[in-house]
Image (cartoon, rainbow, N blue to C red):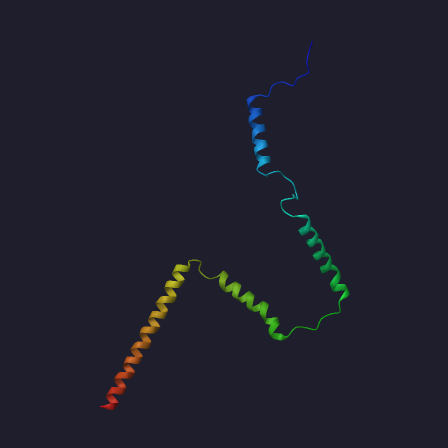
Amino acid sequence: MTTNNPPAPTPNTRVERMEYNRSLSQGSSRRLLSASHFSLVSLLLLICLTASLLILPLVLPPLPPPPFMLLLLPIGILALLMFLAFMPSNARDITYTCNHILRAQKELFISKADAAIVAINQLLL
């Protein structure tokens, strides 16, 4: 009397199975598109949006060119992004530098105002 039972798993096989089951339960399976990413409604909306972007330019008449100032908007955005990209990343130093410059300008303004008050007092005497 022989039975066709599979051999008992070795300890290494058990550990590998537990790790595999744990990885599946944590969602690290290799599915390309899972239900957790897109619902049916959002997938349908994306398909309709794609279809409209493909079909509407063929059906609608061409639009007139935009005003010149509107054409400068992307250039301004690009300039702002380049300025921000090459700006130092330590914001504390930037604020310190700005405050230092503003304080120096304020002191210069006060000293010029004091000099003007002294000059007016000398003229009045």
